[in-house]
Image (cartoon, rainbow, N blue to C red; front, side, top):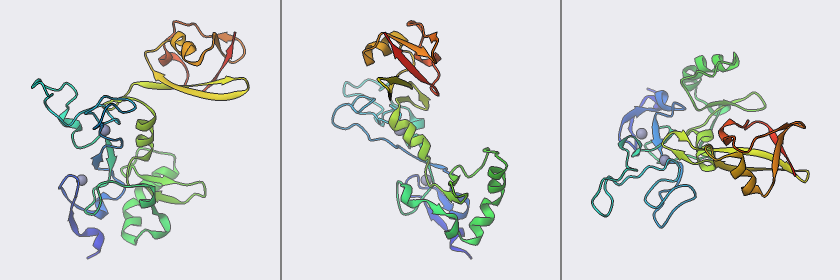
Length: 221
Ligand SMILES: [Zn+2]
Ligand SMILES: [Zn+2]
């Protein structure tokens, strides 16, 4: 029997799994950000994971229930594969197509066909294609982890947005609360007005949520 079919125990969640059904599925979870042990982190207070703002502690030091505690998030907020050997993965754990055993190629073939047809509704969420057209498997949700590092999340909900703007010929960006206004944004970057393209002036009471994160705004006085 192929070693890919051996049953193993996941070091993180304790479930029994076989690699053949596990690789690239991201059925396990971890926290992609740190647990803020000594004071607040970038986005969240002490005692919370910075990636999701949830806390592993059901009670506060005063004996009250901790509103940040959520059992759903205790095991993690970001997807990864089960592993009997490690509790987190990095990009160096990517599995390149040329190294895939035959059984894995067969297992991934349906999703490969879907990706080739531009259908991203795949079971192996970690399956990716590089610029040379070669496939590889990411063992954890890399894009999600990066998003959680860049933005403030409440559980699975993204609470901030990134606004791109051009100032003195230089392209910059700031990450701010989606609920903040264009006025707040202008204060933050020390500018008076922004325009979308050359003509459309953006009103100061507009929420950042309503701005387009895919365009570069221009600053003017
Ligand atoms: Zn988390
Ligand atoms: Zn697991």
